[in-house]
Amino acid sequence: MGDRFKGVDAPLCLLAGAPGAGKTTLLPHLLRAADGLVVMDMDELLEDGKLIGVPIAEPEAAPIWPAYDRMWRRIVTMVRRAGHPVLLMCPIPDADEMSAFGRWDGPVHWALLDCPNAERERRLRERGAPREWIDDALADAAQGRELIMPVFHAVGADHAGLAAQVLGWAHELTISSS
Image 1 (cartoon, rainbow, N blue to C red):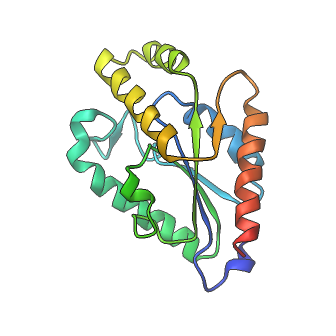
Image 2: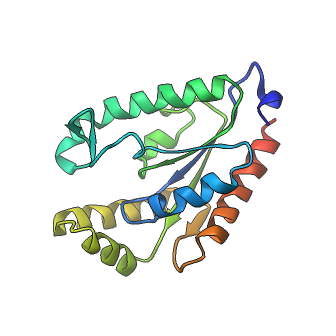
């Protein structure tokens, strides 16, 4: 797949999801069936919510999130520069991040991974998340629903089927961008 994109930035498909949407659960299913698409999750570099010992995955770390985002932009750019289309799972963006002049250079395509609020709350409670984190995740999910289409629903146990749907979307976009 990479040969078609030599000399240009390969497409980037961003699958955004608020905490509890199912990104981590979906990742191994996407990796098994990726078929030439480089699949990454922004949480993959974290170890127990930290990057080289610095807490990243907590609301208190918000001041350093822009630096973490810039690091991911560099990683993704290197892969795309080599001609490989990327599917990156990421948090819900702000509206300005989705604009043509946002964080990512084109071609860029967005989709949302979502689940019902009650399911998200259950998942986050099982992880031991405090109420304020759950409330933040619910607000992020609402923002994602306002900003992003298409939507993939992460409910039920058919993770392989959901991965096939997401990969079908991404492959269709990477082919049309070539």
